[in-house]
Image (tube, rainbow, N blue to C red; front, side, top):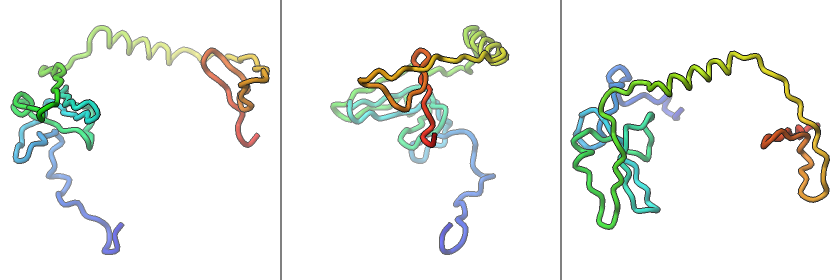
Length: 141
């Protein structure tokens, strides 16, 4: 909140389109691809439209994504952009069904045997271990 009162939006929310638009100035076409710069590798990566708008990425329409060039010495990596509507594959549906079945199963209680401290490298906070998982003692106990 500012000293002058609550902040007001510059554009009323009912006037903003939920469709993501091209980031290029004066271009109002819908975005179909996302451009990300990897400065450490001098690479521009152009791929499918990202799920969420990120502050360090640029959404581009079909025309601007096709005409994209990178600065001299930079490489452009173009990932496949699917222009058709995405439909779940058989594998996606099977994975979803398996996840629902797994969530519906009654949870089994597993108790791991306590870990005996072994002198060197033992963590005093570790109480038990099961595979790669560790049970840690609460700091206030």
